[in-house]
Image 1 (cartoon, rainbow, N blue to C red):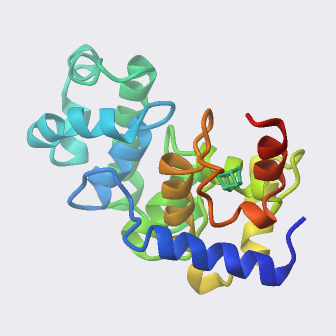
Image 2 (cartoon, rainbow, N blue to C red):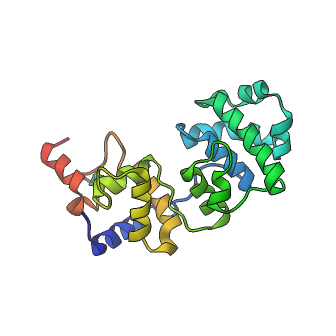
Length: 216
Ligand code: SF4
């Protein structure tokens, strides 16, 4: 497992490699971000970004989603996986926003998690990106990179990964580290073919060294 100094080195390398890392889901306000993050479950940001321009043109407020028939909303997002459930959740969460939160997206993780289709990861992304709350949302990239490098244990659950990162990363770097780790995992330490040969972290990465030994 990496020590404090090694983790600091990783954070600095993430910053050096992806200084501009940020949320890649196109949005203009917290409500659009919330809808986009709900749509992005088990789908790529790129695909969501293809669908949302027309969607956000047509639906601007929670009331717009409430008043449309479910089938019509499903049709509007059907290019995205799990669209039937996602449409139901977007209608339900819109209803809750109107009934409980005055039509506004709440900023706390607890309130966000009370919305349909919003789990801990989605709540963390919205709290962090829309409201600048310190949070580390653990998606597939953050989990893989943390485990490969040895910041977390292989057996850790997603929640344990989040808690470990919150302990080991300075709080004022949580949000930015989340984005940089996503970029590092998405564009460099990819699931299938991580670029270990050219990785500045190879000397301290347990997974990279194993792969280089095996010539994977
Ligand atoms: S050495 Fe390979 S596995 Fe390790 S962080 Fe770099 S790219 Fe990922």
